[in-house]
Length: 326
Ligand code: FPP
Ligand code: MG
Image (cartoon, rainbow, N blue to C red; front, top):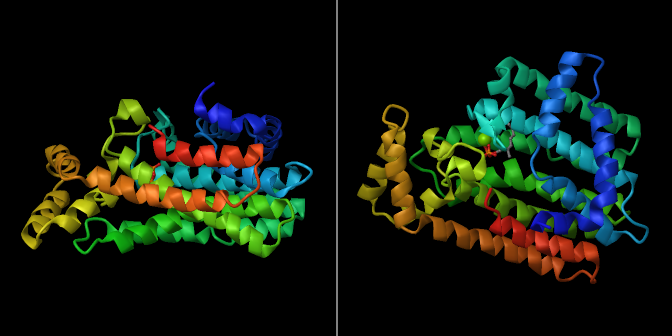
């Protein structure tokens, strides 16, 4: 059994229920729309966010994970997938999870509208459920995703990029939704706001680590990740491995590297050159160290929970996020 399967083992029934719920929620009378939805559903990733919802629900419940957690996981996974369909248009990404992205398979109009459709369905199902505490907890932070993406776009190619600006972006675009996933899991099991807030902190720290790992994996080959290699650099997105190198440079070196980043669109061979500088000057190791700091913070909170199969899986998920290869 692979590592993720082991982590998901206590959640097998819950994942089955939630999958049924999710497919039902995205059903359309139109065969054309159903085909697009099926493509998006079947191209999904590992389901880290629903896993976090269920594990935190399990930790905080005496009676098991229930329908409120399925609703929360479904809302989060729908918002996440809508955001990725849009993100791939924004980032001009051709592949995700080893498959053509929606705009590559169809076109950008389809991507924008399919993302809108998923969001609209999520809100409809959420409101019909009348579980307003769950719906408002989930929807409260999602404008931050779009804000993070907008700020990130404004940061492209900027010479004054630094760690603080990078952390602001990844907190908003990624950590927020993982924080919501853990917090809402606790809330779904009846935890009070203090306890929910503690669970949220686990997700926020894991989310920071998750995005730093994602940015490290951007330097890996496409065959490994299913996404094109150095896609961030190609669009002028300066992430932690390069920021760490820039911090250690003098002003002239920094200006020279940033001048190369500015020219990547017209001189694509510069991408490999910059990536080599990042690797040889310790950028990967520096970013890994920061990622491990965030993972340790998440583990420190998980350690305070009483022992259970859910707690053990959550701790294992921390290790997995730090070690994943795609
Ligand atoms: C992936 O980052 C993208 C995100 C985590 C957030 C995307 C959010 C939006 C496009 C805003 C729209 C929001 C909603 C709610 C529809 P990445 O590009 O660094 O990762 P990748 O390598 O997986 O593409
Ligand atoms: Mg992207």
